Amino acid sequence: MAKQEQIVSVFDLTDPATAGKGFEILDQDIVKLESKPLDAKRVVIKLEKSTIVYHSTRHRVCTYTKIPPGVTVFTTFGPASKGTLNGLTLSPQSLVASQSGAAAELVVEAGYESIACIFGPEELSRYFKLLNRDSVSYMPEGVQILQPNSPELRYFFKLGKNLIDAAVEEPAMFNDNPQLQAMAHTDLLEALIQTLNTAEYAKPSRHEQTKQNYSNIIRNVQDYVMGNQSGRIYMADLCIASKVSERTLQVAFQKIMSMSPITYLTQLRLHHVRKELCGDNDLSLTVSSIALKWGFWHFGEFSKAYKKYFGELPSYTLKNKNQL
Picture 1: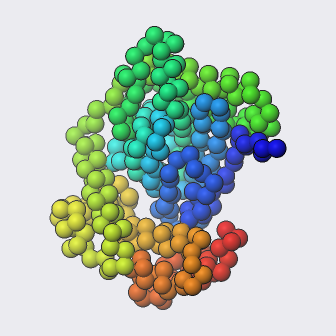
Picture 2: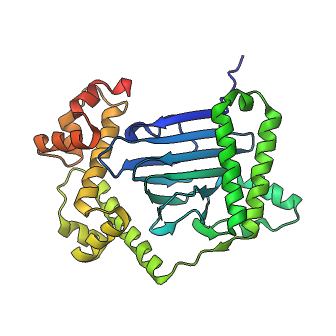
């Protein structure tokens, strides 16, 4: 007898290296921006024709998300949420629409909450056809920030949050009730349509365009570092890779990440070291070989930085990875 798929899943995210395990809906990576332990939460409700994903965090984090093929995602944010999306300002008044293949770099502050509603394009098209509406005008291009009227947007978030709270409190109610799942899907879709009816594309101001350019600079630097994992990081190389001056590079990282380029890129590489230490790697691999792979050649300084960032030595992580 086939095992019934779990409708409601709750994840307490305490380790960024393992935050993606069991989460195949979106291709997502979470990088801590503080030395404090990660304290975040994810709740997933898999309905028949849509999926609801709730995220919250008590610390600053950066997430990298790529939308998989065949889905469209609409995301709304909680009342205390602050952050940037690809350098553009996010707020509780924002609705983000993302299409298949789009990539997003999200930097958020403590207190962030979001509700992401994931639909298949065919489901949205079918529904728009029933309403005699042109679905093309509602479909996003890449990643777009929309600004709907506040009442409709607040209702959309509140509806999603109420569904999440109910599912966490009594998951069996969703798991064993297809009728409830169908009603939840329809209510969310109706609330989304009402919100989109009032939405306008948020044209970036000159200040916002500058921040967007800063985000592009950071992405170019990250691509360079990921392509030169084992090499030493020099500011001159980063400036050449991003085609900007050292001052502009420093300003870009301070404005978007609130830290220097070297500090952030060190944390990013430490993050990838931990992911490898926690992964299903070759048993012959050692801490030193993985550290070298990511450009850490001074093992004493590497171990100190790793412990400060993750609260334990890298050797302990490798030894106890199956318990994480």
